[in-house]
Amino acid sequence: MSSQNHIPRIFICYAHKDNKSAEPSERWLDRLLEYLEPLNLQEQAEIWSDKRLEIGDEWHKEIQDTLQDVKAAVLLVSQSFLASKYIRNSELPVLLQQAKEQGVKILPIILRSCLFNETKFKYPDPKNGPEELSLGKLQVANSPTEPLNSMPEHEQDKILLSVAQRLLKIVNAEAMESSKFEEIEGDEEERVFSSREVPSEVRTGFYKKRLAAKQQELAAIESQLEGVLSSVDELKLNNQAECLMGEIEELEQKL
Image (cartoon, rainbow, N blue to C red; front, side):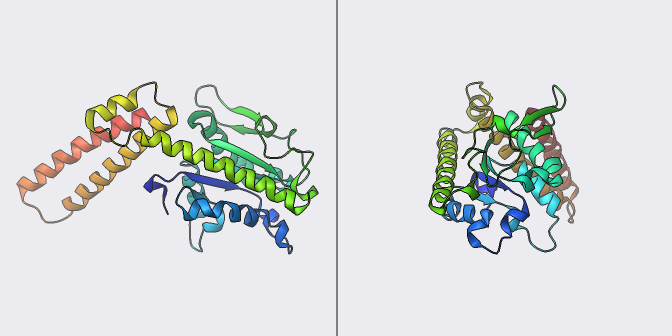
């Protein structure tokens, strides 16, 4: 399943230590994924965690590429999570920036007692310089004073279910917003998506989709140019490539 099919992507951010218990009920990532799997199977969302990485993958690049195209993220918060250098330096800064600029929804779940309200994270802001945020400012699935590991299992299930339901609402809202514009084409499409009435994240998604299509067209032309061509065909393809590069540059400026 790919986000190229316009299926909203949900990123799960967690510390590996919180999914290694010998007790299945304390493997928090696995338990959350059980609740989110129906969204995956029904292609309502693409649920992404680093468990999807395979041997030989460029794992850092894969994670960073994924973070650039998410609709929501779940944080499985514990002291191990808060102490993780990779989460602090490479995952949360991107998610917090995406939340501010693209409206990405971030849903923390408190797994174990930790310095949730006291810990701050920095993230880049191209306009104002680095920003700092305490995760305590985000709406949480459960109170930091009532972490999941302090609850009976049936109460834990209620919290995990509530998160799955919240994510379903987010992806359904995204699908409804996108469907409003599916029948619009050409210049009218450009006019509508340039309007300030269109939510910024929908507008950005539209331009990303158009940019990807133009880049694919350019790659196809470049592939043809590598073959044996007549001088006339080569001239035509070079002209097409030049036009596409101009369109790509314009789209990149809109993102």
